[in-house]
Image 1 (cartoon, rainbow, N blue to C red):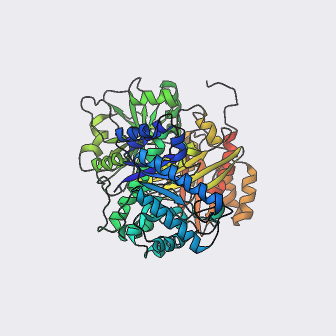
Image 2 (image 1 turned 30 degrees about the horizontal axis):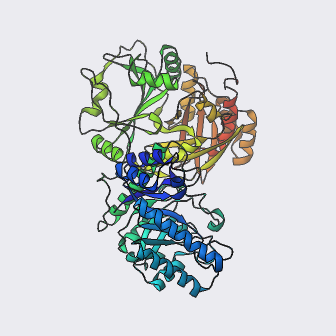
Image 3 (image 1 turned 45 degrees about the vertical axis):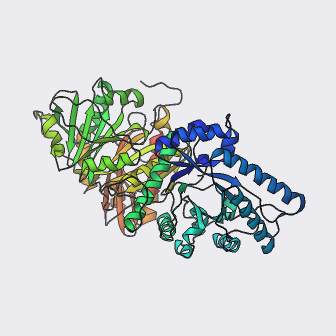
Length: 630
């Protein structure tokens, strides 16, 4: 079995595409003919290039508008076919993808179509080649895989079989079970492509919504399981993906494709142990049970700004690293690390991103196993020199270069604060504000990177994704998607910014790559927490009075309660009897901020209806265009 990807899914010229595909872990490619025709070398050169990288050209695609033509058009089509066969022999490819005809002059006569395809199979056999026939939903006559299968059976040739594309088979709402009667020996090639769950006519969208497996909402695991159980033994291929899904560097897109494909096949084999695929051994997806820490990279000036805000949030500086300029600030189960070292990874992150979250620690059952799964799916392992008395904590680089460390209780890792840090003398007791733990973390990135981040998290960890929500910013739209563990111990909001003028876009403007833009802290009583914050001098975001007038009318709240929320700049929403309260800090570091939330009655959302109000208030704090940083 071969793991392949269509070269058209990966950006760049053919050399860079193949290099990225091989480095990601694939062993084969679907060669998109325009990639070859744009290649400066011969077909033999392309073949040698692929083989030198350990890749096999498993299929050449596409060949369109073949069957149902007559006269000069038919003669020309067969001439094109013979020319294509010559190229295939030189490339060392033995399988050609033929899409059902979209030609306006193609006849719908079943006997003529069958005769043309039979002649196609006969000519392929003479060249020791095979044809994978793909039904295109927008074709003139053969629009479904069942119609294509009928023709494959009618031709009845070992050189003529079926190609299946999951997007074409499932995007109209069809269930994978309807494919159960397709015999595996009649399937020559399988393409895997995802799509959002939308009510649309696939014939009008064609391939523009193709996504990597796991990025959309189609039941690709069911599709792959049905095909595998039928006896299919050919390649599993990542099909051409749409314009927004495949943006980015060639290496990143290829890595995402490999991660998506291996994760999908691993999921299928776990659901049915009788099915095995030639993929790396993976531990099962990791259950993260919480955030152990968040680490900020700062210099002395920005570190002072951050620690001042932490003080007004009633955090205490409890420990200091035994040998480095690193402090631990703590409240409840929230550990904030402030790193002002002038060398090492954190300092490099500061130089690239400015003051920002450079590292996070997740609590897991087994740290080594977590790294094993993540690295098998393409995540680079992270390491740096370990000083005397320090722990070597397993870690990987996340998307965008951020680092994630893993803390378990199997070893001394969970004692890192006792081993690497010394307690500091308490000169003044700081009463806590009732902040218990991290509720969620919001990471901001360019919109085209958003699906890559999502795929990284759901393939490595036992997490589920929500639908993408468009949030109205005064200067544009921000796309937001939530990823969370089953019990909600770990929650991420991924925010994709398309415009630099949005609040999220301005956060990215002066940074190299994505980053954590805000941290939400959970309180059990937001009004009591608010009182403590007032005493500590916390600077909160001021909300328009008009918001509270609307709040009374929308939720029929008691006027005294609304007045209290207005006085505290607390935002509120109600859904199905469950309530959500929010307080925001003023932004620092060109857009970073803290949020305090309270959930009542099992509320599981994130206050999306309040986002435009919050964003409008935050935009007032943006650095004016053209003004340099202080």
